[in-house]
Image (cartoon, rainbow, N blue to C red; front, side, top):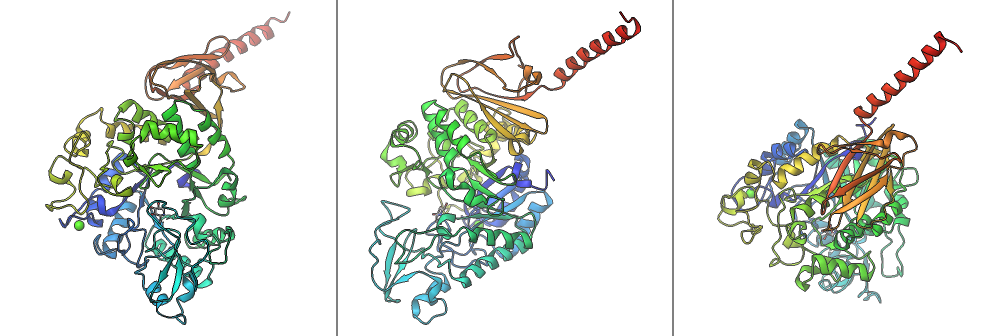
Length: 570
Ligand code: NOJ
Ligand code: CA
C-alpha cells in the first residue's frame, strides 16, 4: 500500500527533450540522446521524469502549441524512439509523466484549420467563436505585456476566436462532448504507450466555461472527476498532476473532497511564499501558506517546486512582499516578466551562493509534498537573459567542458548553450561535478537518497513548531509512530535556536542528525538548543536507536525493582 501510491514520495525531474541531449548531431535534443542519459538520471535517484510537450508543434510556445496529439515531433525522433525511451525507463524503475495540453491547440492543428474553413465544419464547434468582437476581448490575458488580447479575428473564418494564451493557441471548446471524448482518447493513447500519468496544463482554464457571452467564467469541476475516472479504469496507478495556480480555499475543489479528482497539484501558494521567505528571512507567511494548504485527501499530494520552465510567478503575494522578492532576486527590469514574476534560474537568483542553494533545496525536499526538480538545477545551472521571455531559463543541459557543453556535436545548437560567465558550461557541467565529491550534483544525489529514507514527509501529518525567531522554520512530521524534524535558518547570520519537539511523550529528547554527527539531546525541561550557521539546515530523526536503548535500561531497572519487591515483600 505504501509504495502503491508511488507519487506520494517520488523524486520528479522535469526536462524538455529538445534541450537535454542531442544524439544525431543536428543541434536539437532527441529521444535517443535522452535515453542514453537515463543512467545519469537513475544514478541521481530520480523516480519519475516529467517530459515537457514533445508532440509535433510549430514550437512558438516551447511546444505548448500542439499540432498533433498522437505523435512525436520529428525533430525529437519517432514514436519508435519514444517507446524505446519508455522501455529504458521501465528497466530502471523510472516512471514517465507527460504534459497534457488540452486547453488549446496550435493554430496549425488540423482541427483548427478545418474549423476556420467553414461554419459547417464538424470541427467548428471544437473552438470558441464570436461573430463580433466581444466586449471583454482585451481582458484576461495570461501574458500581459506580450499578449494583447484574448480574442483575435480570423480572416478565413470571418469570425473571432478565443485564446486564453497567445493568439496562435486557440482555446478548445472543452464543454463540447466531442472534445471531451478526444481528451480521454489522448490520455488513453499515451497510457497504452507506458506513461504513468499527466501534468495537466492550465487546468482552471480547461474546466472554465468559455464564450463571448461568458461574463465571469465558472469552473466545471465535475470534468476533473471524469478525467480521473477514465484514467483509473485504463491504468489503476496512473495520476494527474494539475497545474492550477489557485487560492487555498479552492484546493479541495481540485483534489475532490473524497480524493476523486486530481491526484496531485503544484503548490504555487507555498512556492511564492517560500521565495518571499528566502528573500526576507521571514518564514511567517510561508508557515501560514503551509497551514492554509494542509487540508487535502489522504491519497492526494502536493508537487513542491522552486523554479520551473515559466517565470517565477509572484502574483499571489502582497505588493509589498512582491517588491521584497523583486529587490532581492530580480532587481533589473530585464529579469522580470509579465508584471508579476522573475524569469531567472535559481542559482543566479541566489547569487550562486552554495549555502543558499542547499538551504533552498533542503526546504524543497522537506516541505509537505513530492519534490519536482528542474533539469540542470542539480548542477546549479544559470540563465541567459539575452534570450526572450521565458526562454532565458531553458538553455541546453551542460554535460561537459566539450564544445556546446557536450549537448550536441553539431557546430550550432538550436538553442544556444550557456557559454559565458560563471555559469558557462566550462565551469558548470555534469562531468566536472561528477568527479568532485563536494559538488552540487553529488550533494543533490546524497540529499535525494536521504529524502527517500524519510517517507514521513510524503505520508505524514505535519506541525510547524513555534519559535520566536521568524528567520527559522522548524517542521515535524509524524507517521506510524515515527517522527522526523527539520530545522532551517533562512538568515545570513548564525542563530541560536531553542525549541521543544512538541511531542507528548519524551521520545523527542534525542534528535538524531541524519546528515552529520552532531545529534541533539534535550535539557531537563525537554528543550533543545542548537546553533545554526548562516543558512544552516538540519534533518533529524526523532528518538532513534540510542533513545530506545536507554529506555529499555530504565525499563529493566524498574522491573528488577519490582522483582526484588516481589521476592521481599514489605
Ligand atoms: C502553462 C505552461 O507552463 C506554460 O509554459 C505555457 O505557456 C502555458 N501553460 C500555455 O500552455
Ligand atoms: Ca537531434
